[in-house]
Each structure stands twice: as C-alpha cells, then as structure tokens.
Image 1 (cartoon, rainbow, N blue to C red):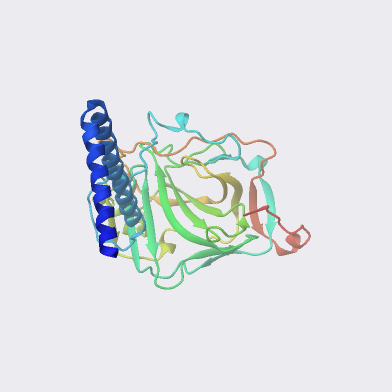
Image 2 (image 1 turned 135 degrees about the horizontal axis):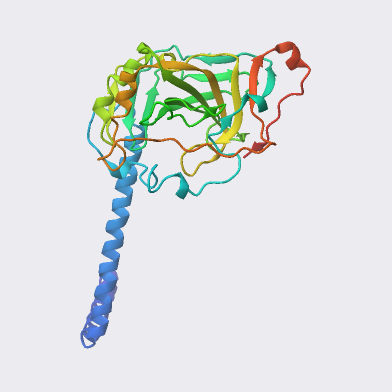
Length: 345
C-alpha cells in the first residue's frame, strides 16, 4: 500500500513538472526570464564563494605570524583605499575633534605628577617569531611569544596595555617625516608602538588603545635598528612579508619610565578612530643616513613609486585639550584626585 502511494505521488509530481515545462516552452519570454534567474543564482553563489575565500586568505595573512618568508605581493590584501597622494589626508573622512597627530608646544604643556613609574613588562623577552611587512603605506612589525606578551602599566594607567604591533613614519627629506611635532619641529623618522587593553566585548576604558611614539634624528648608526633595517630590501614591494631573526622588542622600544608627553587623540590612518592615548618620548633617538635610506626605498601600494611621505599632517588642538608632561612625583600626585576616564561597553 505504501509503495503504491509513493508511486502515485511521484507520478503526480512528474506529470505536473512536465505540464509546467511544456507550458513555459510555448512562451519564449518565460524561458528567457527563467534563464536570467538561473544565471543570477549562479553568479551570486560564485561571488559568495569568492568573498569567503578572500576573507579566509586575509585572515590567514594577517594573523599567521609564523608563516615562512615570502616576497610575493598581494595588493588585494593591502589597505588600498587611501594613500598620501591623490587619496591623501585631504580626502579622508575623519572626525574633526580629538585627532592626531598634533604639534606639542612646551609653553602650553601641563606638568603632571604621576604616582607610579611607567612599567615595561616582558619587553626584554625573546619572541618566538618576528615578522615585518610592507603594507603599502608603511613597514609593520608583529611578534608572537611562547610565554607572556609584553605589556605596559603604571604611570596612572587604568589598565594593562598589551603590545600589538609597531610601524614607522618617514619622508624623503631629513627635515620632516614624523607625524608629531615638538615646538614646530619635525623629525626624519617616528616609531609608533601600538598597545590595546581588554578583550573585545568587555567593558573597558574608552581609551583602549595606547600608542607609544619615539622620534629619531640623523646621527651615528643605531645598531639596535639593524635587525629590522638589514631586511628592508626584502620587503620593498607592497604586500611582501617575511619572518626575520627574533630579537627583544626593547631593541626598538626605549623603556623610559618618566618624563614623557601624553594626550588623548586618535589613530592617524582612516578611519582615524578616537579613543587612543598617546605617550611620546621627547628625547630623539639616533638613526644614520644609511639606515634612513633603506626606509626610503620602500614602494607604496601602486608597486611603482617609493613612499616619499607617510605622515598625516598635524591636527588643530583646542585650548580645552590637555597635553601633559608626566613626571614621577608620588608626593604631589597624592594630593591630586584619582584619575577617572569614562567607561564604555
């Protein structure tokens, strides 16, 4: 009985399908519309599959820190929707308030006593792997650690800030290159070290990004830069990413503990997110002409021209915006109210 019912049902569907197809063939416009619908479905599926593959490849390229050295260029994985020429800062859609970089003028800096010295944790540890990459805009260095990842705390910070990556800013001229200025002076190179605090989704300080910046001026060769500079010729093309011999991050990050500028600002690349705290070491470090020359050979995202400038111009700063010069003075700091920063979830 069940088999007969199933046969009857299949016969019904078969005859119905035959009738539909026969009727459709009598009207060419119906066949044409059905064909368009089938083609649209196929194209949609292909595009979806391609997006999934691109997303997977991008994630692998960005987070597979221990990938083997490769000089292949993949412009599709670069941040190519902005540059420092035709699509430069004058075209960026960024907020107009609390933006970075700025010109730090000592006359308007507020001296601020801090309760604790700035503490650098595990910056002397040897990473398990170090990778440098030309992302078409700058040179980026990332590292992974088998043990503890370097962190910063103290100096009235409200949380621990974990190392993420570092990058460099330069130009073709010795008279400029840095993003920040001090008393209207620019430097030929600026190193920016990004840190973050709090996992995604946690309720943390609104300033969940901390960037530590260093200036460099022309002087004798800085041997501590050589572990990076000696490999820059291998990543001249945009998209090139290689693994280099690991070295402690303290080679690049001078561990100052007091006597630094700080202010609340933003990231300096689109979309220029606000909520970044900047610590800036005022004493320039050394870099030679030869070492700076290697940075100036790096090609931008078009793969043809050298990066002649990768700094955002200084942004206006209102009188209500405070720039601090932080000095360790626990006695004076005890007489000040506890620091308070709004929380965001």
